[in-house]
Length: 321
Ligand SMILES: [Zn+2]
Image (cartoon, rainbow, N blue to C red; front, top):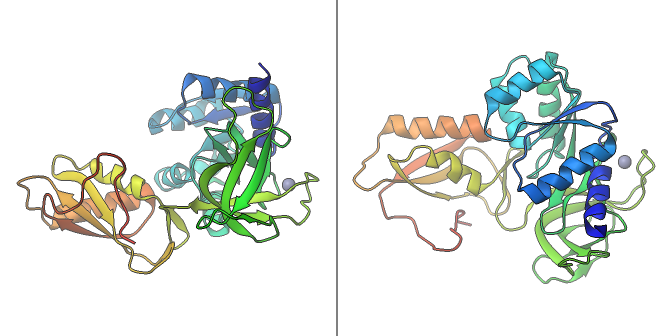
């Protein structure tokens, strides 16, 4: 019970930092297992929100919920927020005042956030949870200058050099991998859990009055690319390309031209054809357009023959660094 209560308290703090208050309607689009979803539900309840779970992957239903139930706030991933913005012309006139983004980095980037706020006509704040540690741990306040640790007192945060694992000072502007430790958890507590999230630290006082260091998640330490301000996950590219099966095999390889995370568009992506397929320009164009529509990224799609990209039975290498 103590563990669960700490989860709920930490999550409630992280969501409430955004400014959502008791009595407001809150649409969520996350899919989570019953245990984690239950804790999130209890956190919304703790704040006093009227929670409207829509789940992911059903845009019609989400748009209908916004139209008919007139929520003050919506929680979704930044990519989905951007997708909806491009698809739905009248979001600005909706009831939504706050958009809480989580699930992947991006919502805290000024240029990308600005686009979302313009498209939604709403304030966009970021939240972050790490399943192994707690459903929602960090939440940004209305000052929009990094996420506060809602689970403060239950979870200890550290910064390490992702290469060496050495601890780094959590000074203003410092970057590194986020490492988290359960302080009170009794069921399967984790000590110095490496999140693989690359974060930047903010320590200057926040005008909201909350204390302690804030973070902005820059991306997964291992695989994320930033193409002109938009975060691109190779796994998301693969997901989109997989929609073209049976013409393609579903295997892809992102081939960045510049070293490092930041890339200029178009991002080269090799897409493997299915066995016996030879491909054509209209397929190339359809994949490119779908990637643009879903991931908001300009790519240069290169169709390659069946069997030319590597296979793995564990995790596929999706980026050719
Ligand atoms: Zn603040």
